[in-house]
Image (cartoon, rainbow, N blue to C red):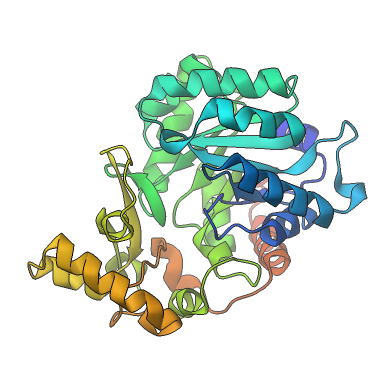
Length: 349
């Protein structure tokens, strides 16, 4: 399926590296840099059409004209958390800015994907590809029936940020999903791996499992173009042993008073004082009060002594320094190709 991706997105280089559509963190500079380096960069669509319009206008200005597809498609994508978005409000933005892909995630119910997919294909005249993120085998099969996505993103439980509260690691989830899709008559849909992948060894492993490319979120949070506080980036570099220093919980949404997430979702973040106090019995009301009080401290409020929300996946311990997005794409791709030379089975690399 790698050949399908290169025909659809002719600027990409293999192995395909995708930067996740992380709200506020995925800046126009980040998305543009990833795509210009041969990956696919994503913006987060948010909930306000006017703000997305501005982001896409800025991103378009950053993209070299030679990187545009011949039919005028902007070589980036936009991701949406569907539970909080108004499809009809966003539709004019889809029409004005024809992007290469729109990534759908976290609906209130899976059936909500169908009208989104239909509208995207209608307003773009089929030029914008529909990507859908899933976290279980059953979800993958159901969304193929409902919306026929062009690409499926399979997210394992090691991922940072939001995901299904109950899921499997990508090491078992991806091959089982691939097998199930093939058995159900969908052998040709490209499948991307997400969750815990931050460097070339993880990419090589994902390709071995059958992935057609990978998505990285946490690694691109530690990029120079990411729109996050320095304190957050410092934590991504400091923290080790991500399986014990990160935690899945709904606390981050409760602290930020983000209301509306479907109940079967939570988020993985670096464990801090807020988590520890919750475990010790502190009430939500007091935890929120302390969180808001520390907001004014800025970067000093990050760390295991602080309370700032610091989303990160279990691969965080492999991040050694912040680099430009292009460097991350180039180094990860190069490292994967070095591994491939030792194993000729990596024909797609």
